[in-house]
Amino acid sequence: MKDRTVIAVDGPAGAGKSTVSRALARQLEYVYIDTGAMYRAVTLMAIRRGIAADDAEALGDLASALHITFRFDEKYGSEPNRILVDGEDVSEEIRTTAVSSLVSPVSAVPEVRSVLTRQQRELAGQGKVVMDGRDIGTTVLPQAGLKIFLTASLEERVQRRYKEMKNKGLSVEADEVKKNLMHRDEYDSSRKTSPLAKADDAVLLDTTHMSIEEVVREIIRLYKGV
Image 1 (cartoon, helix red, strand yellow):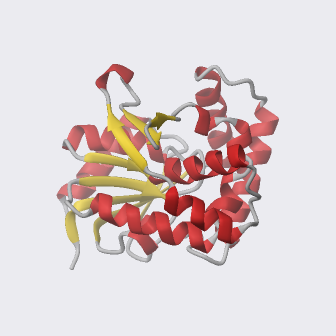
Image 2 (image 1 turned 45 degrees about the vertical axis):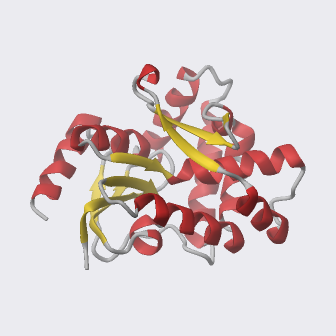
């Protein structure tokens, strides 16, 4: 049975999933869950502990041992969701280039996905949730009442991600961002476990020429029609 109080938002890196999902959750007064941040958190801790991206057993053990939580804090304005690992706020550190370059292979590890999928389902268990990622509508929450697959041209996604990182004070070049997004597109779409894919019953939205406000309005229109 479909759950109307659960909205799944999927799509490639830089398509606007997080920004749109935050704004959508705020308007609906729902909880926003950034699953990509969870995979980034595991990747960050793997880097810190010297665990290789192809060490599936060690990564699975790491994911199981970490206590990942979200905190809502209005003082952060447009980014109220802070992510904590064992009580430490890692919201900025998980967005570095070092983490971005390794998050796809770490995310592809079945042992990691199994642990985090279980946690994500628990977070969504109470309903009134907007959850974004790459396999939410297909694997994590197939019962979601509304599934959205956001996309945009590569050039637009590069500019969005570049601007986002510069606004965070990170040192990065546009060519580096483009190379990273192209690599992640290929890796995420071709991995064996829960690849990036549009669910059969998801609505495809190309946001290349749409503002955040326009995308959110369209999703709310679709949601009210469910």
